[in-house]
Length: 332
Ligand code: TYM
Image (cartoon, rainbow, N blue to C red; front, top):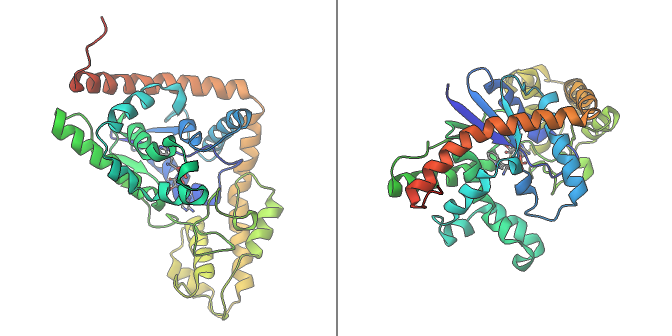
């Protein structure tokens, strides 16, 4: 079976609605047709400062949310990045075929380092996309289901795969980003021209999977809408209303134009109430299940250990191939 692989950073206290609709929903759909691997990139998380105890807690919590959101550990392989040392080992080799200028052009580094100044940014943050390429290429997947903001990173993984194959002979599969049309970019509720983001959105702009449903409903009902009264999809002039329509479309499976027809003559308030209901009824069971799973951390840790063992079987084969191709002397 063809393979897919993806991951989400354990950097916040909860996954948000963008992570869920942009990525997790699509991961769940791949599980029947692909051999799917989903992991928690804890090594990516430490490219910015983390509290060690928090990071451990959030890594488990992220795993629990994957499962609660529909990842079936019988079908898919679920693991933690740092449990599979081959990720860091392959990243080193890929660092050595990545151009300094090429890495400098990655927009995420530019954005994140712009905030604190380049001198404050770590070398880890700079080389972050190369580690991500290693995550992907190690498993030779056909597809990488992600939201729109990861497109450039998957593109780098493709470039590095082609470059390595060209230089050392066919080794890697050139992966494709699997980006769904709907939900690929969910926007901040208070600032609907910026994407919803753990690090950049203020609390009222974010919908967290693990928030109290009352808080979630309230945030949606106080989302920034636009001047005028007509419910229409227009990203340029009505970014707030358009975001709500897209969220509702992803959750109900109804196309945006159908929704626009249904809301003809209705007010923004009606739309907000319906979006709030749709979001809450979808994420409330996920929240409950996550909390249940977190009651038994030993069980979660055992699942993750099992997943890492399965992942290593694949990763070790690729790494051995790479080490041989670049000319490393095999240990006897
Ligand atoms: P991360 O943790 O920022 O996001 C996880 C996933 O959620 C998607 N996403 C969104 N989708 C729609 N609207 C939004 N507002 C929104 N915000 C986030 C992201 O596109 C992503 O799919 N670098 C990755 C983690 C990673 C990875 C990998 C992913 C590390 N190694 C290998 C795939 C393959 C990241 O930081 O995603």
